[in-house]
Amino acid sequence: MAKHVQVGDIQIVALSDGMSRLPPMFYPGLNIEAHPEILNEDGTVHIPTGCFLIRGPGCNMLVDAGLGPVSIPFPQGMPAAKARPGEQVPPLSEGGLLPAALREARCEPSDIDTVFLTHLHPDHIGWIAPQGRPYFENAKVVYGAADWAPLISSASIDDPGRRGLEAIHSAGRASPIEGDMLNIASGVTARHAPGHTPGHYVLIVSSGVHRAYLLGDAVQCPLQLTETDIGFLTDVDAALAARTREALFRELESNDHAAVGMDHFPGLEFQSCNAAGILMTCRHRDPRRRSHGDASTIEQLAPSSSAPRI
Image 1 (cartoon, rainbow, N blue to C red):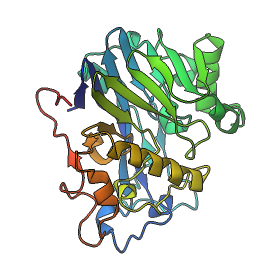
Image 2: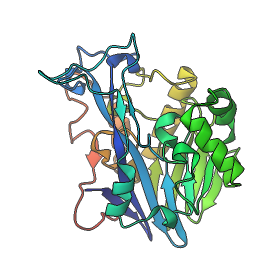
Image 3: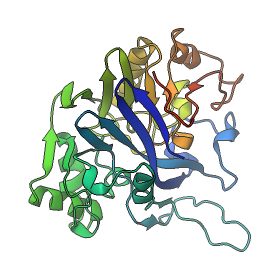
């Protein structure tokens, strides 16, 4: 069931397009011996490929567009997931679930008026235009302009992501952005959060005194909330990515009970920062005392039949 929170009169629904199985090498600085719980029995870290649906007055916005209807095998030379007895090695990444997740949320692709891409990595742009045909026929596509040159125009001409985004450009629906604290829709603000990519953005959703943050890939792993020396393999600028995470953590600590959504957090559960500054407390705790999944370290907003209101 989709996870969701209510931010004043704006609803945010977490959706999954699939999952990836990442070898520990994707998390430089991670001590696997200290955190064996992060590994699945196949020896990899399982992460969802998350997207978010924002519904507000006059707004149906999709945040990130998943991997798309594809399955990606482990490349040669990369440690693969262990196969179960009698089964083949599973893929590195597999997508394709977003259309069903949207239907479950009672949203058609034609209902989406804006697709906001936190950045232009393949697992965030897959449903933009599969086979070069725009999937969200009525939507403009907003993304950080600084990502285009290093991630799209430099890609192979046959790259599916390049073909998809070029199709959006040809259709006149591309809306690249630059700068910081940009209004995207009523109650939705884009904050430049570089490091993972040059044009990475996070979204701040606000309604009255209520607020939520959608962090994209600024935070990749729950352990990064407590151990700031853990990075991610595809961070373009690891030092800048770490500074960006630290700045976001400080801001979250000053926003009591702001909901936090992250594309690759297990279960796509929304997190919250409480009035005691729980994120600050967690980041300075002794990591040997609690695992990253301990509910006492990160307050989770449990899914229910009605959206929790924050």
